[in-house]
Structure formats: C-alpha cells, structure tokens
Image (cartoon, rainbow, N blue to C red; front, top):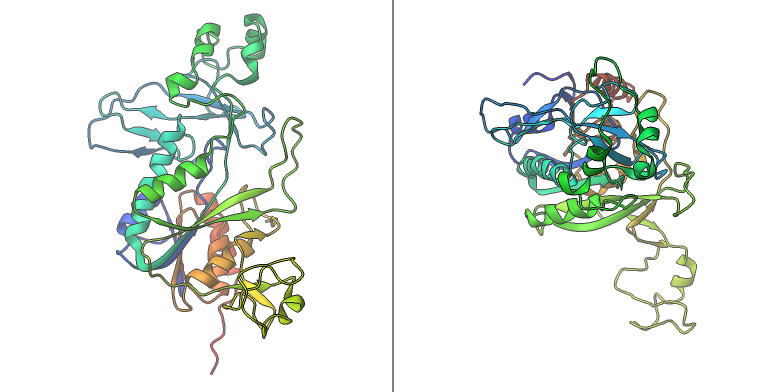
Length: 394
C-alpha cells in the first residue's frame, strides 16, 4: 500500500476508507477522529465505489439522479430532494444535480459515492461497515470521536408538488442529449418516500446522527458521550418557520470499559464561590444560599477548575483553500489531548483538508490520514507541511 505522502510520524493514503483500513494492522491506532460526508449534502465528484460487492458479474440498473435544493429548508445546504429515476430531464454534472448511483440487478450491490445513497438506511449501513473496520484497527484502549450533522428531508418532491404540469414542464425542460423527454408529472409525484424507503415527510429532520449512534451501539461500541459542539457564529439561515441551527454532535465511542483517557478541565465560573465550601461539611444537597449543590469529591478544585462539560462552545474556523467542511482545530485538539497518549497514533478516515493531521502533528502525535479525493489530498499535504516538526528537548 503506497502512501500518497509520507513524513516522519505522519502518512496520507489516497483511496477508499474501507480498502485502506483493511490493509492496516489490527489494534494499531490509539485514537480515531473523523467527520463522514453528510447525507444528501454535496457531491465530491469522486469515482463511484461498489458497496456490498458479492463478486458477481454486476449488471447495473438505471442511474438515479438527485437535485440539491439548499433553499428548500435553508439548512445551510443540508437539504436533499430526490427528484426521480434514470436520466430523465437532468444530466449528470448539471449544477445542483448529482448521481445517486446504480443498483446491481443480480446481487443488489450499490455503486456510488458515500453520502449520495438513495436512502438514509443505506447511507447509515455503509457508515457502519466502515466503522467495523475502524474497530478492528483501534487498540483495546482506543477512543473514537465522530462529528455528525443532520439533514432535512425534501420528501422526493418537496414544495413542487403544488406546481401544475405546465409549470413543471417550463421549470424542467429536456436537457442535452435526453431525447425523449421531460420527466412525467404523475411518475415524479410517485417517486418519493415509499419507493425509496425514506418514510419521512418533507422538511423533517432525518435524525441521522441518532440512527448512526444506535447502529454503532448495536454493533458493540460503547457510547461514552454525546458532545454538543455549539457554534456561536453559525452559518446564517434565511428560514422563517423554524429556529436557526447552532450545533452539531460529536460522539465519543470506545471499544472496552477500560480505555486511555486524560481528564480535561475548564474554568468554573463559580470558582471563588466554591472555595468557601471546600473545607466545610460535605453536602449532597443545596448550599446554604440555595443556589447550587456542593460536592467535595473532586468536583470543585483548589485551582478553580472543574471537569470539562459535554457542551463545547467552539467557533467555526475559516480555511483559505477550497474545502467545504473544515471543522475547527479546537474541536480536534480536545479529543486528541483526552483520548490519545503522547506517543500514540491518531487516525482520520475522512481526512479532507487535513485538520486532524495538522493538530496531531502540532501535539506531537503520530498520524494516519485517509482521503479519497486527490484534490483534498493535495490540500492535506500542504497543510501538514506547514506545521513544523516539534523540537526535541535535550
């Protein structure tokens, strides 16, 4: 397995996460941190991958297409709207249109890009397959941190169910080499929830993080925390019939009850108030003032710090190069400090522009990055090279 880029204590592999993970030795990684492609958000224009391959001579059915419609629910681009089957009225490569892949007519395997599956269930199933391999590669004492956001469902037809057939024909005329014809009106109304397995009404949250977390626990992972990443500078939204989204999930999983963890602290806003009670009698109830409970078992410390809470206020962080989904370095720094020993190995299986790698290198951890897109591998390499090697103390 040839690396795309390699330097002391860091390596980048270009390829499909499942393929690369299967080549890595078992129990060789201390900490995995990643953010998978969100369902229905965008196409990264990578070559389609065959999932659930049964080594048959595949006979692929018609390609399905989807049109992204970020204005439908103003979810910052997280709305997916399934528009139909086959090459009817929309061509691959059209702005806002992407392939939802093909199913094998013989074995049921699916060929496509992760995140563009035609059903939520298929998307979650593919993620669980990937994280089965992560579990094999992770040490018994290892930790896993997965950042996930949700999507709003467009219902297969969305607000356009109210268009007349004439209005629809004007809005979606035939394109390019699609001789034949526009998409049939009645057929379009039928292509939706029931046929695709997504039994959700339009504009409904898909609850993908919750579905993923439940699937992980069912496969033997231990979920230690559901951390809320609160963004005080969220992406603006123009929707007027719901509240603006300001947070995402960061799931903290482990393989075993005993694992490596370095406790992290944060400043208590009640530090001065707490000091008055540190030498007093232990109480499991309210303080004399009735404002909050007192606990002498290490919750309140002499230095005014407390055990870090599970709501992290971290601003989004701009990245000058072209990458859509860059999470901030602080969001990676806390898991590495708490979930990876000083000489340990950090891995990111959807590495993108390389935030995890840059932070791991800065914190003197070893690093393995996996990324399918050559474009992002170049950004990743550039970002790693910009971080100086830590100096060894003599």
